[in-house]
Image 1 (cartoon, helix red, strand yellow):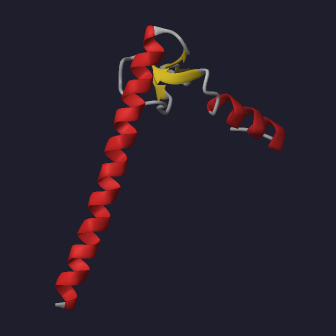
Image 2 (image 1 turned 90 degrees about the vertical axis):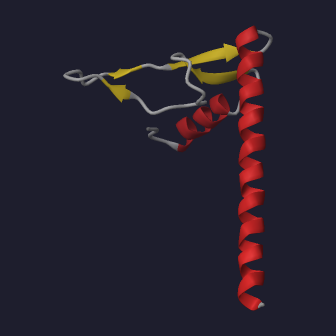
Length: 92
């Protein structure tokens, strides 16, 4: 949560920086995940880490991100094609 426009801009600058990627320290293939609260503990566990450009972890995270984006774009194209095919079937 941010409390001002300045904090928001700083957060966006941090998240958009190409010199590092924020990854899950638990090995999950997620760029970011919500904090998980341990039973009986009100403090969130920190499952995120920053990996810097030039490291092996960065290369792996970058490749995984690229694969995810390609898959996501593929799904969008499939959805558009499905909608078009359904529209053509209805009009026929």
